[in-house]
Image (cartoon, rainbow over the protein chains, first blue to last red):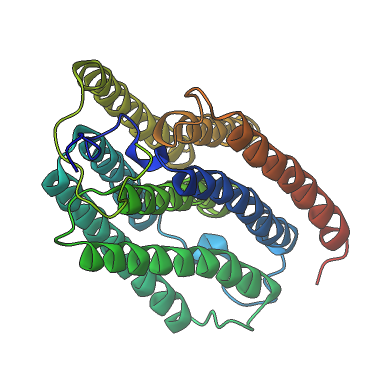
Length: 202
Length: 114
């Protein structure tokens, strides 16, 4: 290959047809995910007052803990933005470094969430304790499962492509994983407001 | 460019134009991050302090959350950049159905208290 076929394009994630398709298909998926979470939010909002003598939102929630979790996830959203910027600059090392940092922040978030659920269970809020309990664990637990999956996805990419450099194949894969990660953060912003702030404030 | 090997390592640096726009983008992203932190903290303080009446606090923090989500979608996830019309269609259709889902579930299940 004499011609410079492998120079870095401005948008490596959308430089191939496969990349373009992946990008569009993933937004279609995110639209569907929005509806999935909406059904859980609607159920929670309808049932959050039905505590059936089990502990309720005001007895359980500690805003400080949730505030720290929010900051962790928001910061991890920014580090994944930096990963994409590094990718577009052609810095593979930078991208890998920012992605690992994103994973670390995500793990921190997950640790707090596991502690939180353990604590609530300890205080007498089992999954079947009340309608509030079931809808709360379903909503926040589904989000936690998404975080877990996202961490697994990014770690898989990081290990598989640890020596590959930026290629037209993996640029779109990293980009899609970052979109997923932002979406997780978007959902959490609403959980923070609707579940925790409204649970304590109203 | 017809026989490009997609698994070949991409060489070289970004063009000067791309470099410049990335620098601008980095600044905008950091600014929106700071703004999002500010909005989250405002929502937190609105609820944590007893001075603000609930009737005002609820719509206010819901508004803050919505603004923050729009910023995530348009800046962090680049829905604002050119050539993203179909991505916008996907996401806004999702949000449209989501709004109806939340409203109908609240009306259907929320009326009878379990």
